[in-house]
Figure: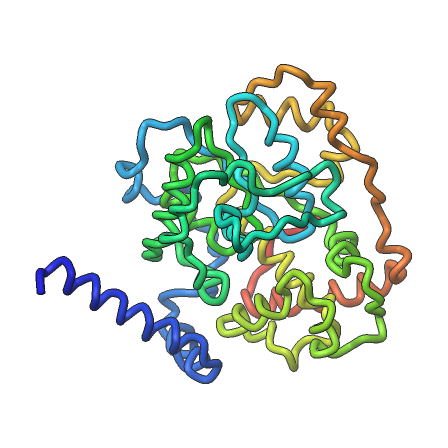
Amino acid sequence: MPTRLLRRAIRKALQKLIFSTLRHPDAREEIFALIRESSEVGFANAFPCSTKGAQSRSAERESATPPPIFVTGRFRSGSTLLWNLFRDIAGLTAYYEPLNERRWFDPRARGEHTDRSHLAVEDYWREYEGLESLCSVFPSRLNEVAISLADDAIAAELYAYIARLIAFAPKRALLQFNRMDFRLGWLAANFPSGKLVHLVRNPRDQWISILHGDNFTTSNQHLSSFKEVDHFYLLRWGKELALTLPFLREQEIEHPYQLHYYIWRLSLAEAERHSHRILSFEELVRTPEKVLPELTEWCDVEIADWENLYQKIKPVSIGKSAEYADSSWFKRHEERCDRRLREHFQRPVSGVYR
């Protein structure tokens, strides 16, 4: 067998073994226990006061194409709105959520429906038309494991997939991610010319949006009770991250809002380390005439019709969380989480947003 084919066969066999092992909870716990003990990978060193910046090792791999724009944010943070604002701007090819399991480039998998709460969005896949070849590099396993990646992690499939999207874009590429929170350092290291914009929303209102209208009350205490209304993978993310962050384990969580708040805080802290700009959803919808000109100028994007852009922003109810619970309820859970974060990291944790 030729060396190239042999190496490919070995690589596939190793990948299959690794990912099948990681799917087993006990095996994953043992592996991550070793990681925690060595402190070489994971969140043990996730929030140091270290220098910010991309790794240089991949700089030479980027082509001379215009620098891509990466829009990131938690689920229900308003990132779809921001993507849709950029979508019709001349000079941009705006890809919606490239890691979504609906695989927008595959007409057989993506379906035809859109979320009714995504106003003025008729489809998510227009920019993916004709890119069926992406099936061969779509990193589907990364939606199940490896929710977090070290800055210097080797993730060849993910790199190849993102690089192809950028290369295939007929105009300057913009990629909007909801699954990149704990891979931002990796993204910055592998695409150092990219502009990283992170969108953040008040965690209380975001919690209401995550519930998506389901009747999940403050009295529903246990995480298991959240399973039926978990539309945005909160339990999956919590279970994966708990392997290196023990305060996220099920027995440590008094109410699912705490898990949401923990991940929200950690996500924002990662954005503060790696993103070039952090954008407030509330400021975007309240004062678009101030926020958007500053953002587009920084992104080096020209706008021909500002009025058309502003009209895409529909009125949004801010402060709706007060209908779910009073401020003291949210504050009690948030303060408990903040104390636990300080205890774990032995210092004040960033990611403060009120």
